[in-house]
Image 1 (cartoon, protein in one colour):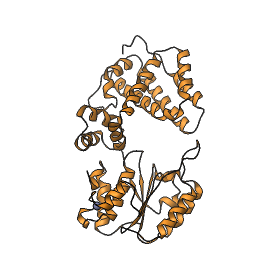
Image 2: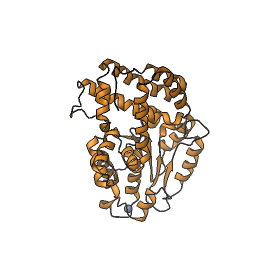
Image 3: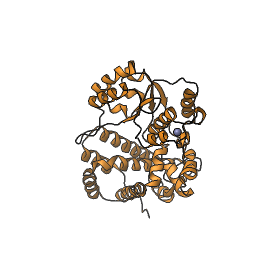
Length: 343
Ligand SMILES: [Zn+2]
């Protein structure tokens, strides 16, 4: 797999960037936005390859020449990758020292390639002084420098930053595109490709990672079992689970997202009067029987309320609310099914 083929979907963005190179109308700064693992950095890195590839214009990026390979491995001397830095237990941040180092590098003439490219990942993690320092580079970029910023959303950046970039907003892909790519390019067996493409929420990077790392699906299965067990348990067991889960806060975002997708599927099944309508794409397709049983035991309204409560818990935790309190409220609020559920 090479060149633009490395990118799953986002055809319009590939066309836009390859046309910019062919027509020599390359912007000095691009902001690539979209949810995590949707392909922002892959697009940025492939664009950097296209800018510096050794092959003739029509064949760039080839993905095979020395420059393309160095860029793929983040080892090309003219292509800089800048990531938020972790310090202590706080949220990773892009700091002003990192920006100053980068600015120094960008002033130098290129060693190997035609363009000096800086990929600034998750620029929404830049603190105010780093963002302000970077503004200078955006306003007066050195010649032959291309700046590629990624962020979840343009609105999270200072308007002075986002207005100086050409924005490329990547949207979630259809599950069929992801399913086809997993089978054709990563040789994932069809049944697994279907499940991963449904669970991916439109993010090909997640699907590829989960196809290569068994642990991801394993953790999901454990999380679903935990949820289905606790729904049938008494109050005291729910307190105990809240306490236990709050000791591993780093695992909570994934766990709660798994629960959220299960509640969402449950709402879809309940909305379809207890059966899975083939036109309604549920995510947890390997859970069909369990979903039908749980959906039959509550009114749709109860399911929708708990779907919302799970979404709220995710938001509260992202805002650093008290972990144990949030989990206790969520778990104690979850309903108990009427009647027996065989699992
Ligand atoms: Zn190349």
